Amino acid sequence: MEPRVHPVPSTDGITLTVEEYGSPGGSATVVFLPALGVPVAYYRPLFRAWVAAGRHVVGVELRGMPQSPVADLRRDSFGYAHLVREDLPAVFTDPAVAGAAKVVLVGHSLGGQLALLSGAAGTVRPDAVVTLGTGTSSPHARRGRLARAQRAAGVRFVGAVTCSLGYWPGHRLGFAGRQPRTLMSDWGYEARHGRYRLRGDRTDYEAALGALTVPALLVDIAGDRMIPRAAVDHLAARLPAGVGRATIDAVPDHFRWARRSPEKVITAVEGWLRTHGL
View 1 (cartoon, one colour):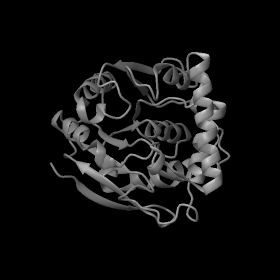
View 2: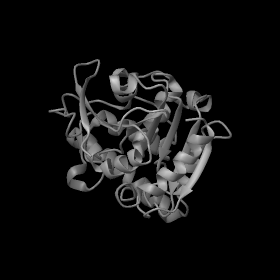
View 3: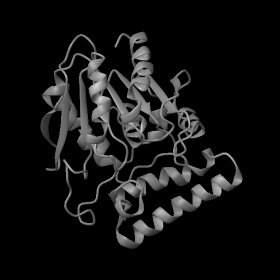
């Protein structure tokens, strides 16, 4: 199954790309946001399995990734606020999304953070938010002194390299792909402080998350070393009581579950969506 590709102009002239799978039906459309540094094409096995389960899926290529390029990350830097306040609202105007009766905003890792932040701030209005392997990057969510120290050292290293070069060369260092300074500054702030503050945006996102009214499900992957359950717990504690939780026994890896055992995640998410009439 090949996707139908839609170019989507964002408000500042950057062209985004979405991939549409399946056709709208009686159930809600899934709008999917990838993890940091992961192209939307990586998730095609997940999307195809979801369509086989009867769901209409729209995958979003995040700004700066191969299908939505930014030529010069030093000059054309962008951060979370661009994604939440410019790019996602533009995606929601695309006919594949705007024509849907209901929308479930699903995100993996960083994509889940963006889904929660945009839903909490009201920059888009999904009918539900689902996060997959999404949690804090804070060392305080690590168990054990050594694990916390290693995580804190990693966060400092990312910050130092990004500040020195003017961008993050994750494509060479094996984490997060090539990313602009502003985005890694937003990532680093949450990693250091365990709360969100977006550069160029005065919104109190922690207060917004605490008052989230959109139904939300947080899914963690058993054995995920990058975002363990404690990291998901840390994020869940900043949301209203009663937010949905699920742990999936899929491939125990932060990324590979999407290609090797997507059905396990889909089954759990679909069960939760049915309870909410979606």
